[in-house]
Image (cartoon, rainbow, N blue to C red):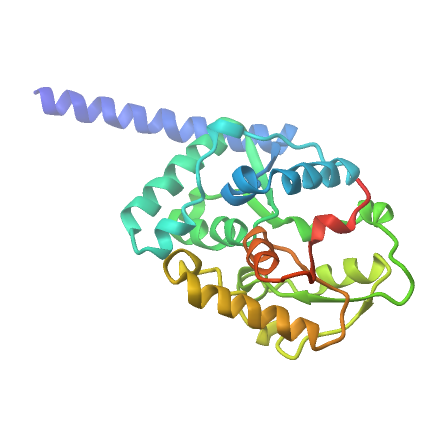
Length: 261
């Protein structure tokens, strides 16, 4: 009898949950939801200056956004790469609940890895439950291009394609256009675009094989130097940190550094 009552209650609860979700969808269609700026763990804790610059860029774009600060959790990319599937799924469900609780219907991130996880992996894991639009910040930069710094005439720049930004998300053109609009003469490295070399930090290499990682990073900077460029630009917090740490006195910039903010 007790089991029967619980089942009946469970069914009623399930109906209420379905009705609630439907109501939330209707509410969002009528009034719109919130845009979340999600900087990602590395930007949030180790590259706070970049986070502040991207917040200013979003404001320049006229995008109203919120941040969840201590309420948000890691996207789960590190545990996914480590093979902890159950932990990754648990993180995905918890993040979805947090996002729904705050009416999030769009996420903008400057981290290609976070963007790829939300856009591709969460959709695959959670199916129709995952109803949030996900964009990398390079996809929304338009109006703020007027605040770009203007470089000395004749200066040359090249771009390092982050693995997740290029191969996974298919974003190649926008960062290059931004660099050109900043006033640089743009040149490509031998290994660029879809054939770009890795910076050497991803996939746990930097954390587990530091010597190998540094060598790969140094090789990538050397490839940039061979083009005769004055500066190497990238659009990923991990790639930036890796290339800058192995650049010596060579100039490395993150895309947000191209803006006068």
